[in-house]
Amino acid sequence: MLTRLSSDTHEDVYRVEDPASGLRGFIALHSTARGPAAGGLRMRVYDSDEAALRDVLNLSEGMSYKNAAADLPLGGGKAVIMGDPAKDKSPQLLRAMGRAVEQLDGRYWTAEDMGMTPEDMAIMAGVTRFVAGRDDGAHASGDPSPVTAQGVLGAMKVGAARVFGTRDLSGKTVAVQGLGHVGWHLCRLLHDAGARLIVADMDPARTAATARDFNTAVGDPRTIHAADADIFAPCAIGGILNAETIPQIRAKMVAGAANNQLATDADADLLHARGILYLPDYVANGGGIINVSAEILHIEDPAPWVEDKLKAIETTVERILARAEGENASPAHLADRIVENRMLATKAG
Image (cartoon, rainbow, N blue to C red; front, top):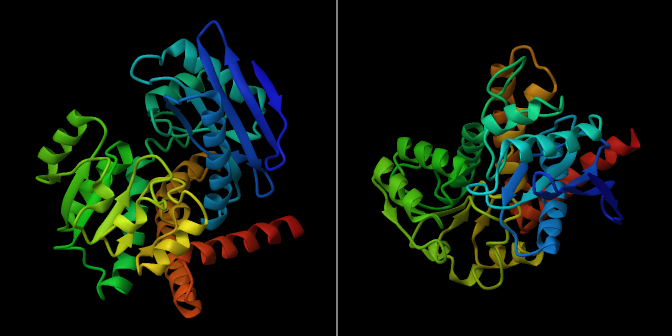
């Protein structure tokens, strides 16, 4: 079921296959220096095996940075299943993936991500101990999506104070790209905060439903990055901030829940050169893994612990933005430097 692949950048990378269930995917462990590798399982259609492998490698590395940024005793890992969750997902397939996770004997903890639900995690939990984000059971943390959205909103308010002179988002226009679990919850929080919304998703029915829920304007998912908005919130797949899209962005700030928003490191400098404040994605969207980690770490009273960690996200964002302003540099580079120093200190210790 697990075939180990060679890697110069990751501790372990595995191809996962189970012909009986149709399972095809990958598990990547970027680092276990700070603790067991933790990161969600996503299921989506990929153009090729190479595209899926590239995604799991990028995402697992991002989880190392995200967990370190949140100061969690966890390393970075990720898993992907190739397929359409609406058509190809089955209990048999999920149990097969659960058995693959179990074979790693706790070096990797999984949870839900794009295309997965707490119900899916419950099925996997029937065959592996190393799954979080469940609705039931000891220390169950449930769907992390609302907590991810809460963390993004807090980071967005910190950024707004620098860009607009106030944390108050009422009257600000936010263009939200991607209306999955996290994107929808972020829309709910922004609506409650008095923001005006423009929403878009590749699923027209999901877009229409969200627009009804929050009385929003509707944009084109392919061009919403260029909407006439104060803030652009990418909450779909990565790579949306690139040499083609950045010149088209009219927002003054980018803050969203998507992972790996920058297509390349150089794109951080393109945003900075245009005077667009970019909130490093793996810092702003750390709420979900914080919530899940309370389950992994068996925190007895998780609510105040999670709340303190969410407040710490805002403190970290403020620290990054202050240093970036002082150095006239992109916050992305400052965030990387801070987190890499933290990871090096862990290894040295």
